[in-house]
Image 1: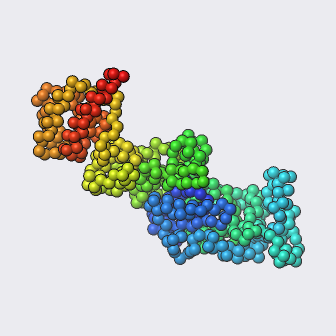
Image 2 (image 1 turned 180 degrees about the vertical axis):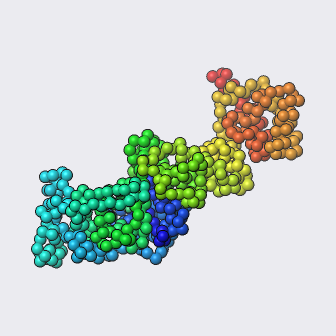
Image 3 (image 1 turned 60 degrees about the horizontal axis):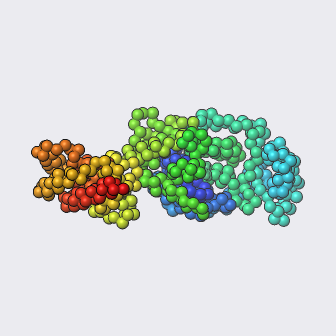
Length: 509
Ligand code: GLU
């Protein structure tokens, strides 16, 4: 088997959609598994749709996800340049080669003439049934063609789709796919500005870059008939890559393709990273608090699964398992709850120190810079309770700053001012502890409650509310151990006064 070379070939027409990232991922997994090469090629020949910043966004998104190209812009490689705009002089020669061999022709029809045709017949297609009625090098005399070109009249080069040809190929996902040449129009290959269209540039570059497998979204399946014809016309059929067309990613309700609008409407991310256009900001998975490894795992399962029970995998584990033959044909429903589940699973897989690195920026946003071991311990303690990286702050801010918000409803329900002497005594008792770790604290509380004939419910809810402001959270002993004796005693003392105030405010209101 030849060395496997695959490419991800996005057009920088906007931010990379999550479906695009999945295409990149499947290419990457396929390449890594085979010890092959993963190439990034920027298809930027359509100047009218070019969006500045989009290429950088694509590169950053891949890098965030850990899907690093082996060859590409900024990386280099033996088959560059990897930006089609930097290769533009090369395509013309291939278009001319097809004209000489009779597989393509010059077409001089003006935009107005074509528009008139379409006005007459909205289903108008420039194809083998009409090409002989049009103004092109098949209908005009050779001298006239030469003269028009000489005069600088605008022209395009079109593919001369053969009549009555069956175009069949095996798609790794879809199986046997067939087109009849009668269904295909005479696609423009070279535009009047001298730039190639997607079809020409894509096929020429796949050939020149020795691509062995084209793995891309299902929306490109209809173009593949033309691509196969181009390989035939160039005489490159032996080098034609294998095709694999990936299923669509569907809206959460399963109805239709997931769009960027759905993201805004449903408050879910559909881009890996934030993207800002003239009108709005789209938050990405990163800004929602996702770990890249969770997003990668989630995306890997949108359209593929290894056929086993296990679902949580690292990128390395995924590429050991990945197989194009297990990619599904049907659309894959985007299930945001499932994405969150993957995130939670991946958070659980990281140890406190690894998590601390990921969580630090989220904490720093609030002006807090805890030391490494403390942050790692908090992360370890909270990790089984959180879903998103942002939750470490929203659920654990009290580990880093004084409690600013108390669950007043819980306090009104639980706090009885007549318990003050009990708590005051408990605070004195705690202050005498000389060892301060979770096990010692647990034992001490047990002993205290028993000796005083109290119920845990008379002490512990108060402690939680005073330390964290809420009844939710990790084990109270661990929480106390981490916060440290001084902070604990101080917050308990403050709690007494605050809770009395809260309760009496309710009583008088
Ligand atoms: N430039 C195309 C895109 O934007 C590439 C499709 C392909 O992979 O052939 O998706």
